[in-house]
Image (cartoon, rainbow, N blue to C red; front, side, top):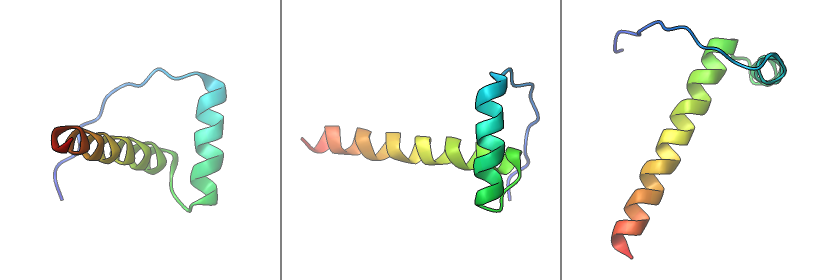
Length: 55
């Protein structure tokens, strides 16, 4: 596994609460849920970029 880099994240408290709740529902920590969501967004962006290149 690649080394992880720590950084400060400023986030709306209401958004954070929703992410915490969502993470609990999916058996992930808050940090794990944020990482998961970011990775999903990056994967979707890559797929969309590939589709645009094909068209």
